[in-house]
Amino acid sequence: MGLALVVDDSKTILEMLTKCLTQDGLTVMTAANGADAIAQLNAQIPDIIVLDVVLPDRSGFEICRDLKAEEATSSIPIIICSTKDTDMDKFWGKKQGADAYLTKPIDQAELSKTVKQLIKL
Image 1: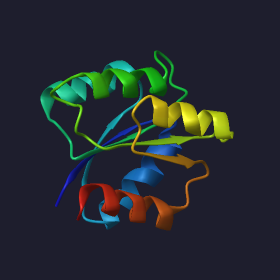
Image 2: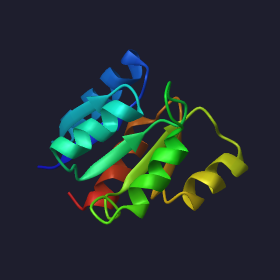
Image 3: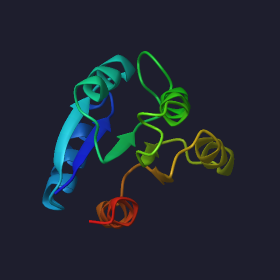
Image 4: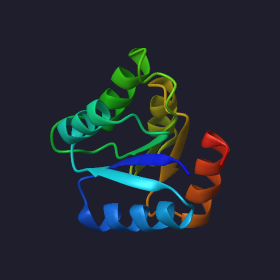
């Protein structure tokens, strides 16, 4: 069993992602903004992070870049989940260090497959 951190400012999206990941056998921590996410990471290091781009305090791209630059968090797989779906957005997400980029609305089967590939459940 693994631990996932889901970061999204939409309560509905948080609930949907939590349900999907829980069905895959993961324990889920949630955060509604970048500050909450960092606080969660300081308390416990997850096996994977599912990160929105548009957050109230910081960009998910910025959070991703910062986490990949820190030794303690650089190896955590990050899946960016965003409504931003242009090729440039996807390119930029990968450039910031994201291991995968999924667009909303999230296809639950695709999320499940991506998570399993990244954390080898």
